[in-house]
Length: 315
Image (cartoon, rainbow, N blue to C red):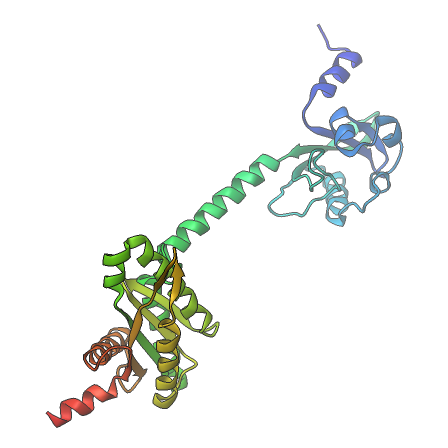
């Protein structure tokens, strides 16, 4: 038994997809209940009006161009949400936000005349899934390169940044400084007040370090109470010592935590490219050695790696 016009209209009315039929002049010949509900434009208001005039907002020119091509070449075409901005001014009823949608354009014959059917699909749930997946991937990527406790760069990202700094320095013949920071008395804070106190202090000191640096600099945590500052903006031994002493003072400032005053000093070793090394490993080793020399001198100090060479010469 063949379907009647009434049966077809009932089926169209049940679709959870927008259907719009337009002729070669963009006059609207079909406007189903789904699109009427989404736009608040009734079938009576839409019929025989032009597609590019029935909306109070502008219809994207890309859609109008695609309609012309569909009719001319008699080929179906899908306009996806990934490649095109919102083509029609459609909005979600509950939030008022733009309705993410894709449109399938199909050439058809209506009453012996060429026409084009627009099939509009709500892809909001797909977009949300894509956004959640993208956010999760960004979070995984962030965790792969950052310390969970402090948010500073981890050893992996530090190595990448340090390798890059060495390469750029070699091209430009421009020195830079690497600061190896070890917190003095940190173990005692953990022993006396517990690891929550130690974690709180580490987080605060990491924030101070980050805020004291320029955007092109890198702050990293190697683990435990060892921090690194990579500063391409520091280009001389004199400047490096001034910066290191400033960091010593900054990191030694106490932190109020649960009615206690937590305080840890900082011993800092400094290495300069290329005097103390031209590779990441050489620079880290030189800065680490200088840091231990600073500790041996009474802690809370900054020592540049060349001091080790001078001391070795006198021995």
